[in-house]
Structure formats: C-alpha cells, structure tokens
Amino acid sequence: MEVAGSDERKRKDDELAKVARQRLDPSRRIELILDATLGLVGTSHFSVVTMRDIALACDVNVALLYHYFSSKDHLIRAVLSRALSIITDDFESRRAAHENDVLGDIGAWFATHAAMAPTMMSRMVKLMSDQAAQPVKDPELDALVQGFYRFERDLTLSTLTDGMARGLYRPVDKDMLARFVGLHLDGIFHAAESRGEIRIPEDIADLRVVLEGQLLA
Image 1 (cartoon, rainbow, N blue to C red):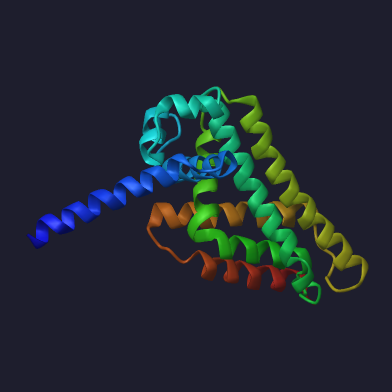
Image 2 (cartoon, rainbow, N blue to C red):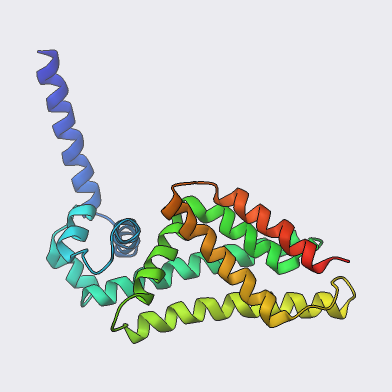
C-alpha cells in the first residue's frame, strides 16, 4: 500500500509540474528552452542535436519550439547570443571591484571566466569551437563568435595600453600579449575537456601569474 501511495504522489507531483510548465510566462519559457539547448550543445556537437531532442529536454512539443524559433539555426543563434550577453554582463558587474587590481579589466575578465566555468563558459566555448570547425559556417553565428573575441581583445588591449601609459606595466608588444591571453583562456577550457582535468579556476590563476610576470617590472 505504501508503494502504491508513493507512486500516486509521484504521479500527482508530475502532473502539477507539467501544469506549472504550461502556465509559464513566455519569456521564462524561452529562457528554459535556451538553457536546455545550451546544456545539449555543451555535451554534443550542435549539428547532431535535433529540435526533437531539444523538445524532449524541455518537456514540450516540437510545435511549441517552432512557435518561438523559426529553425534550429535561429535557436542556436539565440542560445549563443544570450550566453555571450550573460558573460559580458557578469564582466561589467565585476569591473568596479577590480579598479585597484593591477590587471584591471583583465583581472575582471579572468574572474568572470573562473566563476562561470562550471556552467556557462565551458558549454559556450564548445559551441563556438564546433561552429568554427564547420565546413560551411552560419554567417550570423560566426559574427557572434567573432564579436566576442573582438570584445575580449579590445578590453585586453585597452588595459595594456592604459597600464603602460601610467607606468604600471613595462613596455610589451600589446597585440602579441592580447593574443596570448585569448589563446590561453581558450586553451584552458579545451584542455579541461580533452584531458579530463577540471581545474579551470586554478589554471586561470596560473595564467594570471604568468601575465603579471610579463607586465610588472
């Protein structure tokens, strides 16, 4: 009797959860769809993830997905755009706390990467890597990826330029060092996946030490 009662409670809980999902505000439902999609493309190549896979992960029907997104490409672009916005917003929220950081905005950028590594960053980096490897790229998706890297490069160059102008850093090749920072941040995330070593915050801290050694007299 107890088992039967437990099964009945579970059935009712599942029904209530389904009703709650049906009553979701459209904007909240879209967020859940984007989160579920990022989770899928963060573990599988986005080219093999289907709209049906995404619908199953969201516990909605495929028709509802197409109500919000005209195609899978449209959905993937929305996923990456939202992920990039969350990351850049997090960075902006940290800038004030890093005003006295010797690395300034670069320090805030490192902090964002370390804090968001377990969820957003790792999945986003995989999605961008998969997009870059496509023989035929989606121009809009590619523009989002390139925009992200321009943002990273610009904030790094700005920090280096300001630091050298104020005498905080010794003269360095800014373009080379900005590329070094970007490549090594990407490498940290790719290494975590390929080597199975989940130590992203520690590796970012090590990158910071190396960068300070290059900049500080």
